[in-house]
Amino acid sequence: MTQTVRLTTAQALVRWMIAQRAERLDGTEIPMFAGVFAIFGHGNVLGLGTALSEVRDELPTFRGQSEEGMALAAAAYGKASDRRQVMAATSSVGPGALNMVTAAGLAHANRLPLLLLPGDTFVSRAPDPVLQQVEHYGDLSLSVNDAFRPVARFFDRITRPEQLLASLPQVARVLTDPADCGPVVLALPQDVQAEEFDFPVALFAHRLNRVPRARPDSTELAQAAQLLRAARRPLVVSGGGVRYSGAGTALLEFAQRHGIPIAETSAGRTLIPDPHPLNAGPLGTIGSSSANALAGEADLVLAVGTRLQDFTTSSWSVFQPSARLVSINAARFDAVKHGGQAVTGDARETVEELDEALAGWSVDAAWTARAAVEKAVWNSHIDGLRAGASADGSLTYAQVVGAVNDASGPDDYVLGSSGGIPGELNGGWRTGAASAGPTMDLEYGFSCMGYEIAGPWGASMARGVTHPDGLVTALLGDGSYLMLNSELFGAAFSGHPFVAVVCDNGGYAVIHRLQTNQGAQGFNNMFVDSTGPGAKPGGVRVDFAAHATALGCAVVDVAAGAGIEEFRQAYDRARTLARSESRPAVVVCRTDPGAWTESGAWWEVGVPSTLTGRAGYDEGKTAQLRYTV
Image 1: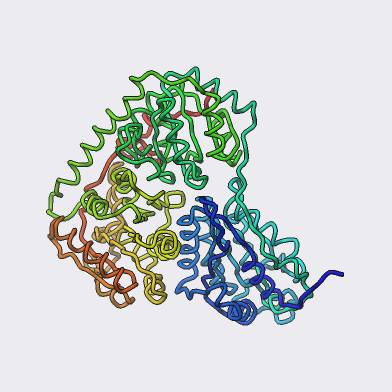
Image 2: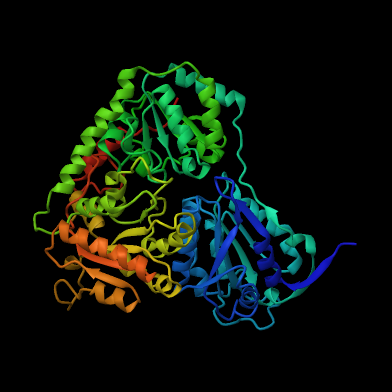
């Protein structure tokens, strides 16, 4: 006879979460679920809230300040753990649930594990309509949680307790599947959360959820090897899948044996040491002239673990039209893009098997040497930007990134997401040879403003366990700070240290650059051109230092007009404060809104024929690689 235990739906869910185990890349067994971010309301406080309270010592709960912010922090935790651990986030139904849809979109675009547990309306419908319920005239079964469906890898609404028996194995599958990884949404009606059922005890037995390593099909592998042997100027593009597979070392050894230069995507950054002679630099629109130059000459592109986003491919204009494409990816959806030779499989296992298939083959030494030659030119360019100064004497982004880079050690972690910062980090950051694994979270899949405040909270939780001697630093603009700053208090309240460098440039400067560079008039981006009727020119400015102080952060304010040495001192001071006081430390500095690191690569945006930028748009369209043959 099956042994059972009577529990509420919510109790069963959290006990199952506690029972799940996972493995780090080094094989260490760890809890699969590290904790839960929660904002309670009438839709989850008594059901799920009570269940979480009962297990608070086994599954910690962290109080968020905004539903979007805490879910973004949970996504960042998943990335900082290399997709080996998961954080959950729960809210009530209504605005709380809808606030998490943005975070689900970010996790979906970036293929990050995230468990969202929004409350839902009553299955019984007895009290309908309840507070925060949106009624649909033609379909009473819909709730606001159905908005998650387009941005969820797996969605389920639990309308009976025993449905967990069928749903929970799928939850674990999606969160650990390299090909299908992404956000999971379990909508939990509040009456069902409190409903009891006799669950089989076996549901709560410890289970180790290993991340599978799919081997490639032998025919696909042989075809890829044949194409590579025929290539004279191949280029490896290393993406985020290399990181999550732990394939960085294998890929570098593969490249060394065969003499193939390596370029990195924004998701795959910091896997290849900057000084390595095969490191061609970051690829694409916000990449480097070095990687882009090699991409323009390569006759074959070996894309490993990348979904080939437009910033990586410069809207498919960075490669020569005749280039062949071979894509190694755990997800066949990504591997078949642009008609390339698809090789579906785990990055590490596939690269190692491809290495064996190419035994004895290598490219001409002259092509191999091009990586170091082009990279030296790019590094010299970055050195010049770091040593330079802006026209008005304010700090440049290159200077700020350089100072943070110089002060960071091999266990430190840097994070960026939106605006101009990703281009500065991607193009200008240099990874030391001694770095302990990936040291950057460049969220440029969704480019979500505000992730730079919530993300380091989650990253500091994860990195605090695996890299206790390191420190997380987030770089962001004033626009992102104003978009979503409440989780500074969340991190301060929970005692998680990181440094946030806020670059005040007077508005949405990177979009202003895009706008004016195409010939449009500056409008509604910088504060000086955003005022409405009756407002004074420039509007009201924010005292970021005072605001961050009020949110419980340590603050170091770099005076306007201060130089790079003053910033270095301020950043060093912030690092000391964050560590010693176990809370976020915010550095506020003023940066030139017009000084940027440029790769020279194109990016497609719609340009009206009335603007001067239309000629460049038409020229870029002619250079696009539309399909491989």
